[in-house]
Length: 62
Image (cartoon, rainbow, N blue to C red):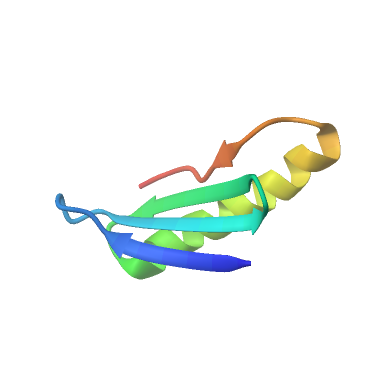
């Protein structure tokens, strides 16, 4: 799994993970640690949704 953290032009940190081909999770925060924590929530939710057959998931956001 590859995780990317980037800061956008508004100063918000964005996290992205491609868990496997075609399955992505996203997270957002005011700093890298917050974005990573939100992303990890998104990854956990994605794992749960895949077990239940649901679609794409994002973290809860800032």
